[in-house]
Image (spheres, rainbow, N blue to C red):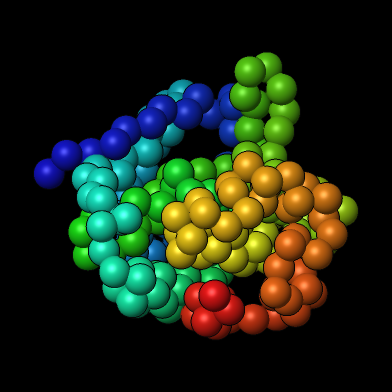
Length: 200
């Protein structure tokens, strides 16, 4: 089995170490019980954290039927509801973090800490374009942001980019307005993940 490996210096992870350990344990637990999350484990060394995730080979999404796409998205959404029930937030549900393996859509790249130093800047590691109004105002990342990101992912993957276009979606999402959606942001964040593919 191949693995994707990332290294994080502890000095660059700004959350409390106990919170980082708790999140890493939750990610590992979810990767065992939820099929859409590749098997993941973390190794704590003296000065760094090693993130080791099962490598997922990308298969062609565009070649499968629209009905198969809807089934794959719905199956993923069921897993995302289970992930949320565990209390796990991804925080960066953009199209590059979902991989179709020929059968399932897999969600990759769970950060061990949302607060990090990157390029000498203290940042929240998240898809800022998809942050909910509440998360933006509270400088936080919650399942609200995951739900908005998943909405745009569904729109993009079901139109193959022939809808508004991914970059335009991101632009409108940044406006924190109605997110160019069939429902308002307030309505969306109250929905279950499994209900989102039904909007398209």
